[in-house]
Image (cartoon, rainbow, N blue to C red; front, side, top):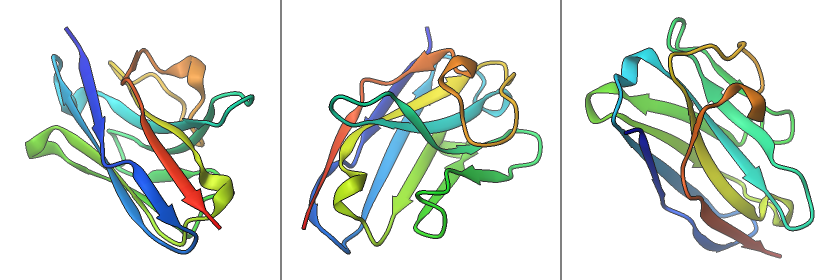
Length: 127
């Protein structure tokens, strides 16, 4: 059974930083592509960042490029999202997702390409 467990959310002031973690289990981690998504109240879930098994190349939404960094530790079956220079508009529930085996097209992650989802972790940025 595939499980994804996010942690690391919280409340920060604008300009601050947070690091989200997503611990994966129940599948061969190296076979998957991993993505981070977010959903603000009243808005659709949107892709934030993804990292692809084959190339290891990260992809970011324009809104977070230069501020967020996705990385992974294959030994720990964990993917991270380092978020710097946070803005109030980054406030949302953040979700980790996996495409297993990886069928997602490289690029900004699309919700329809991901099979498994974590429960989410809240990020709140105050001005």
